[in-house]
Every structure is written in structure tokens, then in C-alpha cells.
Image 1: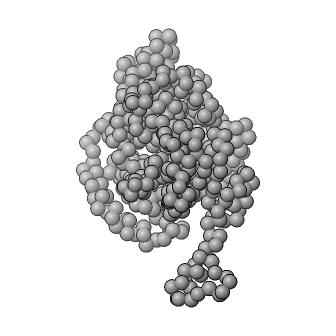
Image 2: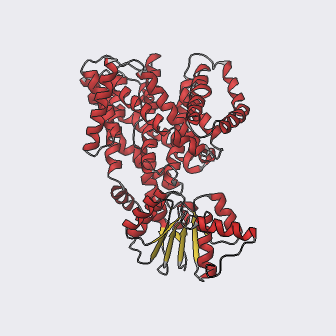
Image 3: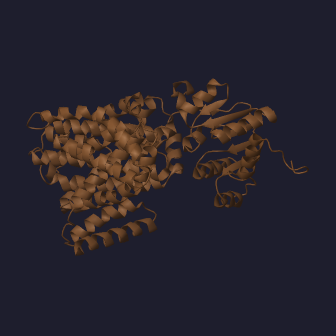
Length: 532
């Protein structure tokens, strides 16, 4: 118990300290692992399990949010596969130069060792990228979806390496995994019956860890892959997003254990620390390679840079590959702490770079050659609104009604913006002028070419936070027309009005009167004379 208390206290204090100096808490969590180890504190019981379950829950929630078709897009596999090859060669070449320069750790290292180390360094961190995207609420953006798809493909290749390098054939029990597809139907029925409370949370944990993590481990594959597969199988459900959100806190607390464990597992020596820090010199080449490959497949400079920056880390899967190689005598033990330092150091570097935000990204993007619009992917091209006088963000029932009112009653040319592709397609089929785009995606606002004729912007998205974000973007554009916002409660109304917006509709204001009017109409009751 005392050991656990020490771990929790040190982790909390260093995570808080990292926040105070404007670094992500995970930097403090990494430091906590190194500190408790250096102080001679014994390893906390169960830390490995916490770390493994944290990664499993992360992979499960990624699967819940990821459209499997995203893995088949050319910008995903066309970036992931060449990057792994070129990054492996660059890493092997860099280590070869260090060997020629007299590095003791690389003395006598053959080409196979150099390529294996280069391969371990070619992976980017799924954990880091997913956490940053969630914090920004941009895991649904184009660059976020692309980055996650690239990472999933990399993780699959890591699993392929571990399976292919095994000294025995895969366990025949792996064929049992085929049965997961039909069994998923039963899981969905069970899911519908458990409601939306704590049972849904427990359902998500159980599916991620039992048919996901445990079953895949039992048949000789990695549990992380199993959790990802279970997430992908449940992703088509309309409740997948709700389940992912309900698991957020559990996943976050378990991932703290993962970051602490990286430091705890590192048996640091001066030689290992020095080599780990030297390996960080590979990060710029890794990031630049991501950017160039994604540009080749039609992503805008800024989108490619955003994705490249978030992918410029070394990976926890690289550590798994290295540990596997050490266990089979393919690498010397000293490389594990060196790679642990490199992974932890890459997280710190990436955290600092990503904290710099849009300004740094814009400078990188502007330094790249200008791209012809025709070479860009359709969903990454500039958005032209045309000569419209009104914009409606969010084309649900309220937004669609506002669109119709502005267009048919007030005679304004209008355009709607809707992030649900199916709903947008239905509206377009009805002749409604709708753009399929996400107004909560910062990239949408970067691509937007607004019309100088716009007089009214209506923010009718269902989430208050989404409307606030869009409002910030509208104000940043120095729009001087009228902005109208939908709010669901009094606090939201006050918050919006404090920002200088007067045209605020309380969603339920007048709903009682409307309901009573409708009931009386159907009952054939007329209003009192002088009141109707």
C-alpha cells in the first residue's frame, strides 16, 4: 500500500508541475517513472497490468471511432507503408554512421541489427497522437482521421512482425477469432439491453478486455490488436460514440500507468541515456517524411503538417518489438533502456511542439511549395460558399427549419453546413444547398472562402461547445453581420450573451405554449377572445 501511495503522490505532483510550466501532464507522468526508480522505490504491484489495460482501452476506443474504410484510403496506406520502409532505412543508416564514429553500443553491430533497430524506430506513438487529438477534439478531423489510420496500419505491421518472427507457427486456435464476427451480433443485442449508465461502461470494459485483449493474447497475438478489432466490430453502432465517451475517464487513468511504466522499466545508464538522446535527432527526418508522403496523396500543406507533427514521435510498439528481439537474442539488453529514453524524449519534444499550436504549423506549411487545387483531395480543397447572404451551421431539425425560414420567408440565398454525411446527402437530394463539412474542425475554417455578401450566420449545432467554437472562428474572421445561436439552458444563454451575441434562442423557450396550442387545436378548443 505504501508503495502505491508513493507512486500516486509523485505522479500527481509531477503531472501538476508539468501543467504549471505549460507542458502536457503526460510529461510529468513519464518523469514520475524515472524519479521513483532513481529513488530506489520498489515497483508498484500491478503497474504492468494497469499499463497494458490502459493501452487496450485506448485501442478499443480508437476502434469505436474509426471507420474501417479509412484504413483503405490511399493517403493512409500510401503514407504508412512507404514511411515504414524509408524510415527504417534512414534509421539504419544513421546508426551505421554512429557505428563508424566509434559508438560502443554499436561496436560489431551487423546490418541485421541496424535494420532491426531502424524498424523499431520507424513506428509513431498511437497513445500520444490519440491523446492529443482527443484533447483538441479533432480526432474526427481529416488530419486526425488520417493520422489514426496510419497508426493503426503501423500497429498491424508490428503485430505481423511479432507473429512472423516467432520460433513456431501461429497457434491453430487463432482460427477461433473468425467466430468473433457473428458473435458481435449478440454483443450488440446485449449492449442495447444494458442502457446508458454504469452497465454500459462495464460492458465496454468487458468487451475490450475479454474477447478483445484476453482472447487475442490466448491465441498468441497481441491483446492491443484484439481490443482494436473489437472496437472496429462495434463501431457501426449508432451508440459507439456514446460508449467511447463513457469510457474516457477510465481509459485516461489507466494510461497514466502506461506513461509511468515507461520510466519504471528503464534501467538507466549514462550510455543508454546518451544514446536515447542522440536518437532524437531522427525525429525531424521522420516528421518531414510524413509530410512529404501525405502531400503526394493530395493533402494540403497545412493538413499534412498537422498530421506530420502529431506523428513525429517514437512508439510504445517500437519498445514491444525491441523487447521481443532482446528476448530472442537479436538485440542486446542495453538497447531497451536506450529506446525507452528515446520514446520518452520524443513525447516531451512532441508535447512542446504541439503546444506551440497553429502558429508553428502555419510557418511550416508556408515554407512548402504551393499546391495546385486540382491535385488536392476533394475534401481538402478550399470551400467556396458562393454568393450567399446566410449561413446555417448544423442542419438538424432546428437548422433545417432556420434555413427554410431564411430562404423561403425572407428570400435570402442560404447555405447549410452539416457534418453528418448521410443527413447532408438526404438534404442535397431534396435540393437543399448543403455542404458536407464539420464546423468544429479547425481545418474547415482554414479552407473556407467566405462571401462578402453574408449578413446572417446561424449556429444551430446540437452541442453547445461546438457552437462556442464556431462562434470563436466567426469572431476571428471579423464578421460584422448578425450571429444567431441556439442554446439549451439558461447557463448557455448567459454564456453566449456575455460574448456579445444578442440573437440567442433558448431551445425550450415557448415550447410549453406551442405544446398547449397544438393540444387545444387537436381538441377543437378555441382561444379566449382577445388572447389568440
